Picture 1 (tube, rainbow, N blue to C red):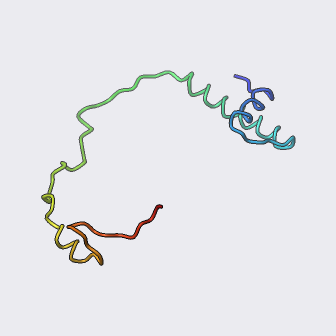
Picture 2: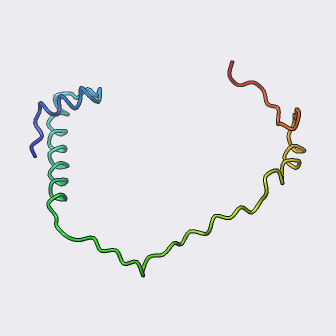
Picture 3: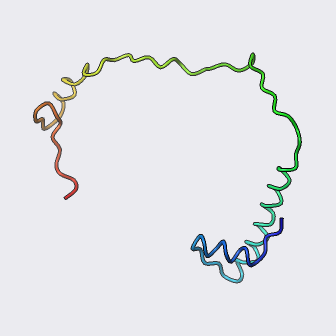
Length: 94
């Protein structure tokens, strides 16, 4: 696939990037190289083989170790301001 100066101009307008004349030639060369590489990848052939025996889940089982509210009182005891079992903070947004 060829990437032309017109394509580069459209792409720069869509992305709202201004490209100067001396950058245009380098960008055009880079884009053509990238598209050439992508087209080369698309032409490769082969099969994807998955071996179920060699793959396994290495992530630990998701188990809840604490009940909700276990540490609530300890946290509230450390907070500088508390109001009705909530940590009171200064207003940030007006």
